[in-house]
Image 1 (cartoon, rainbow, N blue to C red):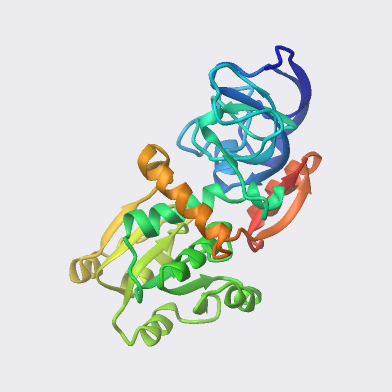
Image 2 (spheres, one colour):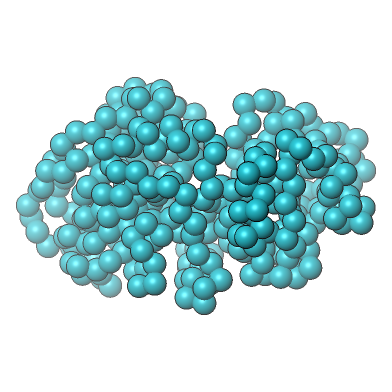
Length: 335
């Protein structure tokens, strides 16, 4: 390993707030410690969790000066003691299995634990490799591990044009399910159909309950994946099948959801909060997830969708673009 530190551009913030709090500074990046590697970053995946952490609304509070970022891809620059299976020059991507108060990915050069690394398939670009793990591991955890989806089951996917929503469509198709994508934007209907959604409902124009009742012949939906919450939640429960599985894995809506007590008592759904940590904190499940995802990528059945790329100097613009909620797929920063 190299014992020399290097100076590199790094994204920092010293107070919570909007994208304007993100600053780029030249920071001394140390040599990797035991069981760590240092990486030259080529691409960074931008996640909703990054913005929540920046705002101070995440599951952990930033410790200032704070760094940011869960996903990235690049080339190993230095290897610490006790690292096996990786060498300088290896092309790798990062599985987001760490605290943002310990490690982060927004920068030209970063240090991360070796256990977070995966050698990504040569069929993927750096941008695609930086877009895999958060969305795909979340959907493995939701649909394969938790819901145990079966062929023929119907799945509602809200915020369907997000990277997680598109991953959910791919996973549903791969497992033989029937995807019902919900979007608020009429302009995304064709794109969602082209992305593999069996049915698309535009919430701004169509009656969600009536449309889903027609699709399911009034039987209701077996699995509901909702990162939105808010007023739509009671409509989703209204179209749930008896003993449906409902997973809440985000809170994109700023409005409070109304709990539909009577519908819950009638339909008896299982309603669960979900975090990808359910997979990432369990080594045996996470290894199964990674194996499943790599196989899907190699077979061409799973593939990240890139919405737009920004340069590292445009990190604030990348966050502002994400918060517009107009993108289709993953927002990526190239380095």
